[in-house]
Amino acid sequence: MHKLLVTLSDQLFVFQLQMEAQFESTDEHYWNRSSRAAFSFDDDDEIDVAIDDGRLGTGLSSAIFNDDAVSEASFDNSSALGTLNHLSIKSILSDEALNLVLQEQTLDDHVMPKGVTPEEELKLLRRQIQSTLYSPNLEATAQKLLHGKTVPLEMFKSLHEKEQLLDTLLVNGGDAVIGVLLFLKRTLNATQFHNILQSRPKALEHYLSYLRQSGDVSNYIVELQRFGRHQEAALKQFQSALACSDLSTRKQQLQRLIDAYASAGVGVIALYEQVFSAALKLQQLQEKEKDIVAVLTTQPTPIEVLYGLCTQHKNWKEQDMLKLSSPQRFAAEQDISPAQYEWTAMNERAHAQAYADLECIFERVANWNPLKPKQFHISFDLALAVLRLHELQAPNTVLQLFLSKMSNTTEKLALAQRVKCIKAVIDAMVGLKQQQELLHLKLTLPERSEEQFYCENALKTLQSKRWTTDNIKLKL
Image (cartoon, rainbow, N blue to C red):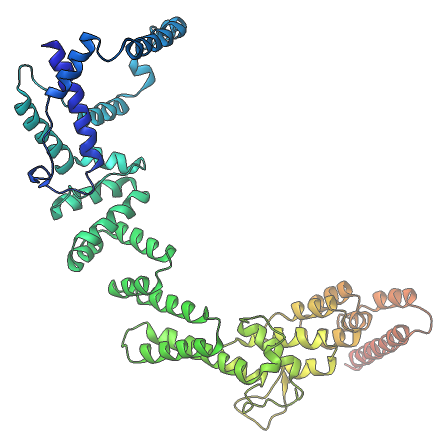
């Protein structure tokens, strides 16, 4: 009887391995197929009898038992046993980890009651395999997925079971959520799947992240629009259009985008339509002004294109808004701010040492009176312009021009001393009536130099004004 139980246990173990190996290619009618021949326990009995009778050969049996004897004799486990005898299982594994281990082992253990016939044992084994492989165990499956194990999910058949599995994984997150979401998309209809995403924002973010990282741009945009995230969808469409390497294809994509959003009726479209149109005009300019764009990068920014247009512009005294390559027109079409336009043009003209054009960049005609002479106007801090021109080694005459536009005399003096513009320093001292400082400065200047003559004239002017003021006081 003992021999029969041992043989039966071995046979069940082999049978279980066969079932696991063929799980992927079988269905629930596996056992009903006529092609699957039933096994017989008589074969094992014959093997047992052959071993008892010694008909398998003394050499083979001796070799088997000798190997076992050698391996057991050569293994010294005294030290290991001595260490383990002083350790408890709880000192190695936590209660939670131990419960998980026992739970997983329980799924694979098939304990058979004593005294059952082979036919009954076969039926019990079949029921156990069906309960293990076809009845979902939520916690065990979730833990295996979180640990990166491959687990068949087909056992989760109902919508409720699938939602439970997803909710369990969403608590911990990780890549396992993506695997379950793809399983749900494959096994549910579109309405059910999107309802799940709608009610679970965290699951939606996981799914969108997967689409974005996998490069599935079209489905990513569709899902964004489906859930009302039109701004993100428009931005992604815009990026996708600009990513086209071919200029003609890029123009077509942008035009299609403009046409689609012009008639979409979505509230955020007004914000993006201007950006799309500006990008299309930029592509058209690149196509027509190939000489200018040739020296730029493959996909230049509007500021880079503006810089290129400044290098080719000849007439800075007049603003030609009709010419496509005019820097002023391009800045207006691309919504480039006045400060960005002025800073870019100033840097380009200074690099080109075209200092005569610098003042024209900052000249403006009053909108309310076109007949009024142009006035100097700068859209960013004047001190930044002076420091940048000094960094680009602009001559002192240019620095003096920009310093003369500063209204705060004290700040002008400090900035003029910093950039070593002597004439501007003298003008600031005159404005502050610092006669003693001017006399001291004159002594430090080279003899008969231009700066020394300029300082002497400033002193004369300051003394003359002082005498005139004192004379008025005396008459009063």
